Length: 291
Ligand SMILES: [Zn+2]
Image 1 (cartoon, rainbow, N blue to C red):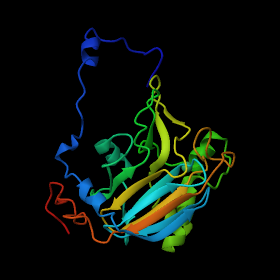
Image 2 (image 1 turned 120 degrees about the vertical axis):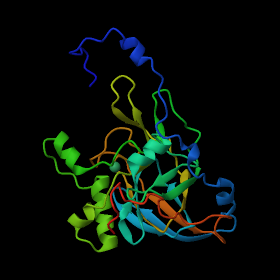
Image 3 (image 1 turned 180 degrees about the vertical axis):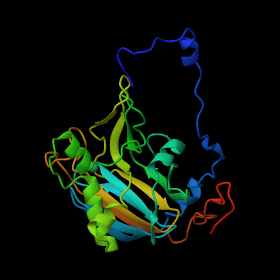
Image 4 (image 1 turned 90 degrees about the vertical axis):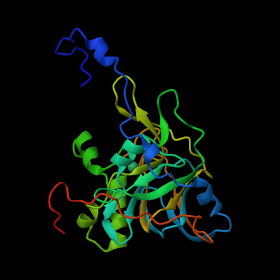
């Protein structure tokens, strides 16, 4: 793709074909909408039940019961976080970055949801507040909290660096944290680590080549993104070795800071809210159902 000199000549109607207007793949108007007013009202009188400080270049796990809230808070300095979510008690149900992107776009903010993988596909968490929502899209096409990157990992790093071994990429941090939480051996835990929500990370695609880019995160201490858990959750958050991701990751060169996770229990669940139920698809896939 993106050859400067294509091998094949454009057909005579090339301009007309290119001029066709796009349509949104997944119009989300039909999705059940979270009642943000009710969600936010439930914060009144809530109780802080847990705090987890994620050290720089490390990851930690945390539990959030359905109907409770959690915040990821910037402390000490600009720092990007890589977030994995699992259904508590079933690590096979995990965050589905690709479908979340297809539904909500390249970056998440207030009102958007983190969806679980097939065959579950239900909301895991809803963003209820984002202090960086003012950022929008900048002139480079960059925005905050992306679901277009994956997570920094030592395999890509080895490919790009003639085999250099770096052990504190988010993939490895999350692997160690999930292993410690689950009791699984490291290599078994690694298989559960999945594509992330890049919390506070400022990213986009270059307009000319379509390449994934990052730039210094606009996050500052005190900023946070807040979620309400739609199901019982196990979360895992890595404080990326890229720090604010202004320059490079997959090394110890960037200035890194901790991230704080806070879990809040509301006095009562949001009015009218129910935990997310199973997806309505019957899973027969056109054949006789075999349980
Ligand atoms: Zn990372």
